[in-house]
Length: 114
Length: 110
Image (cartoon, rainbow over all chains, first blue to last red; front, side, top):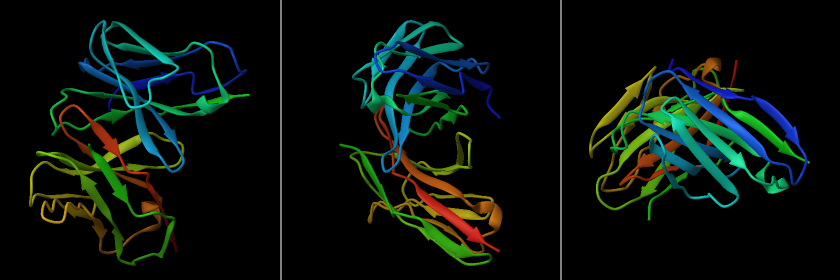
């Protein structure tokens, strides 16, 4: 199994509070991704990173920011959480962005915004 | 743009039944196609992949063939087991874009 951990695994927070989710990898892969998983939508890309300090937006980036100061860590921040951000968040990594390369997923973080 | 459509679930089968989960895609150029599986409480795991037309991906008794003429990548297994109960996602990557289908929940009963 690819060495990917996410923390916390579960979090309940109130509307309007800031929240940071952490993804940590031990594989030294260049690319890292944050997805959210919602019923009926599959997984949707929030942000991704193609190197230290290099990030870009995905399909559903509004309300989220990311940072990557080290190869192994990719942080996802909700500056002011809303109920629509209640979801399961998955981090993923890959060696390359080329079409043929698969992604490896972490165990997920279940976030509930009340 | 790129998109993936897969059959809606849930799908319930008896053990040893034949499984088909349909997946079609929209993309320009030469996408790669994947099937991922998600067991309860876990992240997604790659099940199989195909990177060019007519390729067949296979793993653990599951198969899928990349059909460019019908833009499809249907997942099949000849004899399902209770342990195959999970959610299955079809996905594609194309030009720095990865898209997932909505997922199909499979339940296999003994």
